Image: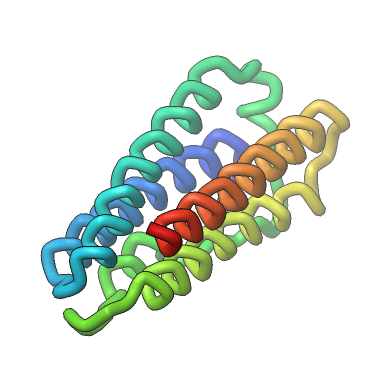
Length: 151
């Protein structure tokens, strides 16, 4: 999948996060472990919050930034990738966390690729802010899951 404008990248991120939420919901229905189920239910809520924040950003960002054109920013069929993810019913919290971080990192890589070819300071600043927010969200997510391990 090739992206031409920043708004297309953001729309892809929103769709990808929704696909992650659906994946986690499906995995929660298949998991045997109550702890894995609890983590997956938390992750469904987490992804909904991320979708809401990205949607708000897309609605509020200046059109001159959103309409910026990119060359050579490629993404994958992320929704298809999420649909193919399978873990056994005996999945552990670590298995779930591993899948989540792998998916999240591929979305961060897409933003990083866009940053490398951003043409204006405004667009670079917008993408850097998004990347920073996503990294902070990821760190908080990892810390939250680690606290769940302590329970």
